[in-house]
Length: 161
Image 1 (tube, rainbow, N blue to C red):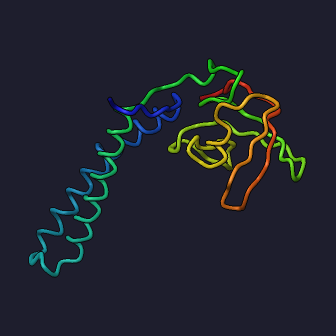
Image 2: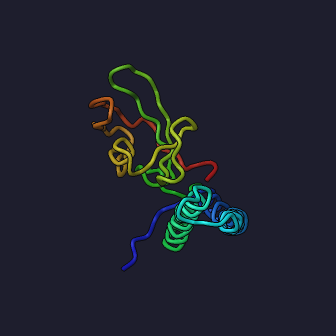
Image 3: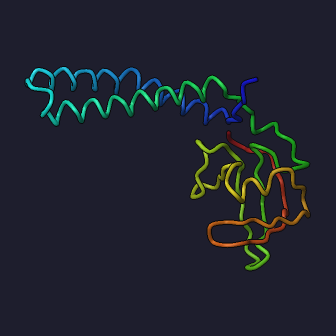
């Protein structure tokens, strides 16, 4: 059975857009760079050729990775997720028990998460510890900065996703 990857509509669209750019713009550019470098003669000592081949290898790897993720994507409408428990796509407001500071994150996939814009990966230590929690539940998360304690104070459906 294929393991599905939860993804928001926006996250899916961004990956699809990146794949199109890589296939339609980047790939032809790399092929042209290889052809140009090949025309310069001896390939053994041709740094331009080797750099272009390296770039091609990285590009093809990313294309394969994107195709795999898009093929296994389970697109979730974040505006329709349950608000009884913390689930993918939900917006969770936490109270930091040490500082009394309120923090709000939307739980998203690793490709979409951006802490600075208020989203966190469901695979990150804090994101993992939030999954399945309800309002009033306490969370103890082992983060790179040490162990932190939070209380879930609100769960909402994602407004944009």
